[in-house]
Length: 400
Image (tube, rainbow, N blue to C red; front, side, top):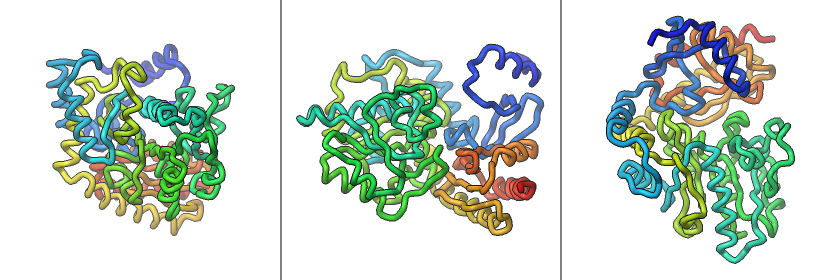
């Protein structure tokens, strides 16, 4: 099939798609590694990676081969049957985490929905039916469904969808004292991102996550880590909480788990997972043979090719190069993050920088208006970082 002209693609899309995205004027048609190409043949180094999704880059041969092979055998049946790829993927996740059980779904929002539901169900099964409220943090992002939107601590996300779902309270991120004060007799869980992503790559302070775990243990409630963005190696460890040596009772994953295929997962300890019995929760498309085959190729690649070590090394290198720019550009307030989840906070809007970088052939992201976010594939090279840095420095130099 011939590739449509850029303007034709944009006009067609704008005429039929819901207006839910502020799209950049770019029609991408192909990708390989850390590079994507548009409909006019121009190449771009991709430091967005589908918003932290394509951890192995675009068109990774192992993933492509696994998906093609599985598509020729079995794409979908139903979760009323067993399938080998799903069982093997769950086994890998259990073997490489704190958890004993896995529930597969289709997205991070659905994984967080499952975590919220199991927290409430666990409280009731434990003889505490009055406990149903979840404590979350301001600046957080947990999804776009009505419940996960309500859990999200950003008013701009709430606007227009009120009344929100009852059962969520919010305290400042990184404020242990506020969390301790807010936990009450009706609290069943604390839901938190180890590092806030959409909130601006906000890092936890020393002792914060450990303090939340102790608080949960003391109160007999669950600690839920939303690792939808931070998980699957994004920070240089398989899961971000490993950096802090703090483990949750429940964890959610999505984004990088299948390198672009739609998957989410909720992982839990055995005693918590026991609250999900037949009929309490389900999904039609979660954990299909096709998607799980792709995810297995991802995790096998992580195991075999030293991707996490490369992420740590290149992440430190990129962070150092960003800090070099920060010294020379007063508009930069701070560079922060771990691995290849890095943010550069500016004193002014970063949107013009995103546009300027795109024109120069580099794709980056801006969140919270003033935080440039760098989320390249974990396989990005130092040479590709070096290619991006001068363009970024020049773009920042145009800001006032």
